[in-house]
Length: 146
Image (cartoon, rainbow, N blue to C red; front, side):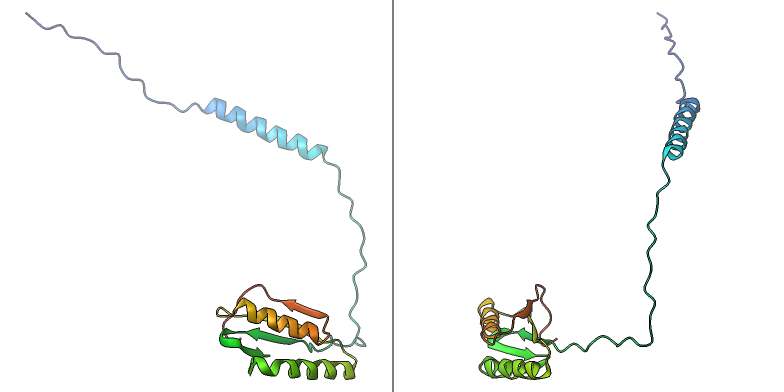
């Protein structure tokens, strides 16, 4: 018995049809052209920019104080180490100095990675007891003494 040969149809090669792709590109191009033609021109508002004067004063110096809280109730007053027991007298002296110079006392309370929440609240209480209304609490930690 002789074997019968089965003819398989030849496989068609995959083709990328370029005509539909060109149609899509022309459609997108026409859409963008029509869209840009329909835009109204944006009107701008004239703004008079300030001109620097030689008579202007430089900005005032920053007399604010940074109190950084660290571990074991240790504090840093503008990067100078101090103890918690010295804080009330130091804050009072700073407040009276600012009042006598006519400036407003401002305090930034910061904490490092090792700061305890209770010590930070204690510093905040001392600042408020001294009558300083302008204070901020920094929400990010910084390295000790920085």
